[in-house]
Length: 302
Image (cartoon, rainbow, N blue to C red; front, side, top):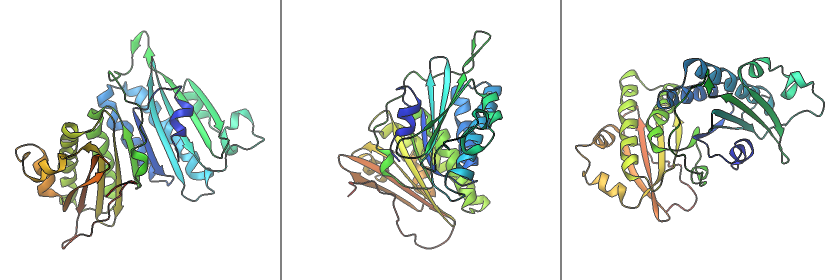
C-alpha cells in the first residue's frame, strides 16, 4: 500500500506514527498498545486517550470484519498532530464503501454511532483504486487548555519503511518515540510468539537498547522498523542508520552503553548495507541452538 492514508487524510501534515498491519482481530491489541505507548510522550489527557483507543479500534474492527470478506488484508493506521487537534486515518484496500448506504450506517452498512460520538469529525472516503479511508478528528483543547503536548517537529515520510515487510511495519518521528512504540509492539508480538516469561523480560532490555543505539545512529529525523514473528522468534529490522554505525556497535565501542544488552541478550545482531545507509537487524529466540537469518530486507539491500 502506498502512503495514501497519510496523503489523503492529513491535509499535508506528516504522521507522528504510521502503522502497516494485517487486518486480524489481534491487530486491535497492537493499535491500542501503540496509542498507549504514545500517551506518556504526548502527555495525553486520559479521557482523550480513551476516546482515541475506542474510536480507532472501532474503525480498525470495521476493516477486520468487512473490508476483505473476513480474510486478512492490509490495514494502515496513521496519527497526525495538527494545530489544536489529533487526526487519525484508518485505511484499507478492501471492498470500499457501498453505493447505497444510510448516512448513519457508515461503511459496509455497519452502524458506527460510537465513532461519531467520540470524535469531533468523522469522514469516509472511497478510494479511486479501491478501499476505504476513515478519517477521525479529535479536538485537542478543552476549556482553553491543551489535552496533549506536541513534539517540536515531525519529519516527512520518505518511503523507507515501506520497503520492509512484517507482522508490523512502522514509520515514526521524532526519534524519541521509537523506544515506547517499538517496546510495546515487540512485547505484544513476543507474547503472541509464545516467549517464556524469562525471555519475555529480555525483550524490554533489548528494545530499550535498540532505541538507544538508533537515537545515536539514525541517518535522519525519521525512523522505520519492521517486526517479523514465528514461534518463539522475533526479528526486528530498524533503519535507516548512518553507514558504519553497526561496526561501532559490534566493536564494543558502546559496551558501557545500553547497547551492550543488545549484544548480550540477542541471538543475532547484524548490520545490512542499504545503498549509502545501514539497517540494524536483531533476532531474539526462545529456543536453543543456531538461528537462521531471515531478514526483512528492503529493496536495494546488499
